[in-house]
Image 1 (cartoon, one colour):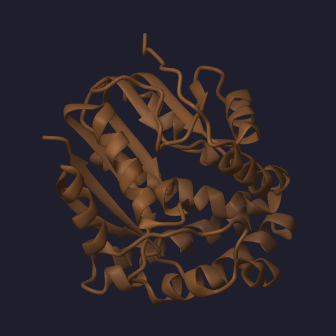
Image 2: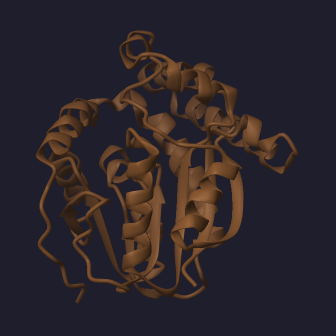
Length: 270
């Protein structure tokens, strides 16, 4: 049984994130894009996760599972027990309603309610790129390092600031992006491959591999996905998902960090 510690909540951050994400839970127009995102992330994790099963695995947010199928079904096949946390109570409730087997906790990744060296695998799927500063990212990485066992793995994805589209998006006001339909929630501090590698190594992690993923231009793909979700047939949606997947071939090119919207890092605690 995974023991939990009592930690204090940052109520301001918790309430702010709840206000942003709660309306999104009733947004079926996002389902098609979420299905593509889940498929790309699941393919990466399937490659990175160790063969066999571990005892305890942690996922650092539940947005994927609240909005769609998410990654839980695949993660549950790789661990005896999957724990997950989220700051937003509405997100946590929606995810648990879909997956009652989850050990779900309302918690902040910067103050984890787990003992030191208790987890074997941590999946942090675009969680840390919602903090406002690099200092907060480092604080979260230190906590993730603390709760991992020696030899444990952190499988991390974050917004890729090397991609010009991400760099431009991150300096524009969220209010403008939301009016244009280009963002549903605020974006935070992040970095490119080199910066994220440096932050991980400063905390103490060994970086095993980095990748770039989700290469389809979102400014074009997301509006089309929303339109097909509302009016398209099942056959059209399937064809669209296949076309989106074909963009992932760009991950094999030297320019992959210019086109990928996310950086993925496989890091190990020595």
